[in-house]
Length: 157
Image 1 (spheres, helix red, strand yellow):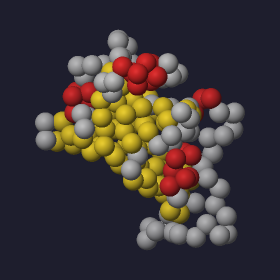
Image 2 (tube, helix red, strand yellow):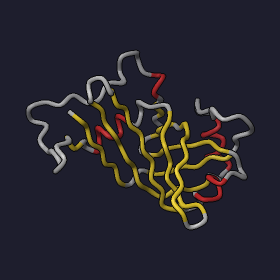
Image 3 (cartoon, one colour):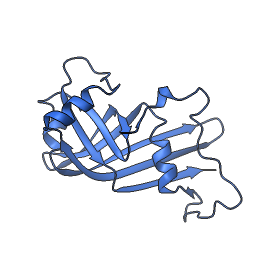
Image 4 (tube, helix red, strand yellow):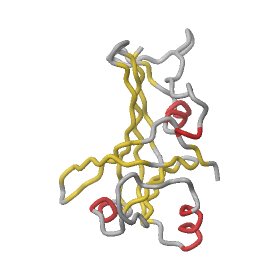
């Protein structure tokens, strides 16, 4: 199991992917389209992301800290939370970004996939051992795993 966290990386590695002359695709808004590999790489660079889910038939967005394990986004939350209840075998989106207002540069990555509650003992043991602790207070013994099935990203040049 490959486990990557933003703060485990050497300092100075939070920069966006470098555009080169052969980095071709630009969307209709003039933003460089990031490859799925670049999107996965950037998902290791931020400590906080936003998960988008449905709460009482309405869209909801919640900031969460997370860990990327392979192509799985792992979130640790409270068992009775709205997030835990709303992400049981449902399609969700996850977004991270980084922008520099001074230079007007930045990037954004969105992952879409099915979220599931972790219930198997062996998987719970494995996830509990990961260096993922919630920034929010209280017990956080419920794990949500979202497999990133669609990855999209854009970079402002």
